[in-house]
Image 1 (cartoon, one colour):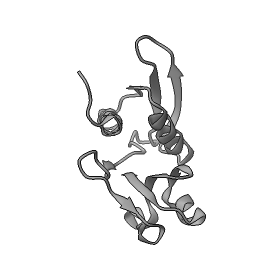
Image 2 (cartoon, rainbow, N blue to C red; image 1 turned 90 degrees about the vertical axis):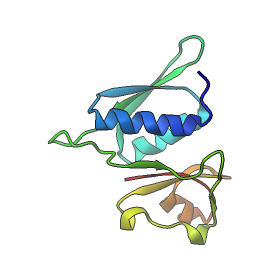
Image 3 (cartoon, rainbow, N blue to C red; image 1 turned 135 degrees about the horizontal axis):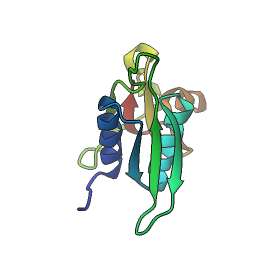
Length: 132
């Protein structure tokens, strides 16, 4: 079954697997999804990921991360810019998530960046999602 919003589907898979306390989740591969997963790993929201080459489409296996009391590292993940309504922000309009406790992931002209890095490089872009 075709998916109209592949990034939204990926975020929903991560959210559902995290809430169900699964150890890993498998996501269909795309370059954009790999970049988002790299950002999540760098920021400490997931443990690790691996790309598996299988036919007809490669897969990304994401290892989820939990605290000592098995509380998920990802408590909330929300898609902001959707295919029906794109959200673009200038560098001065990038708001902190939960007072700086979360991150925003942006698609900029310099690649996929976290909100703090986008402010540092003084670039705006499409606000893909927020994670906390």
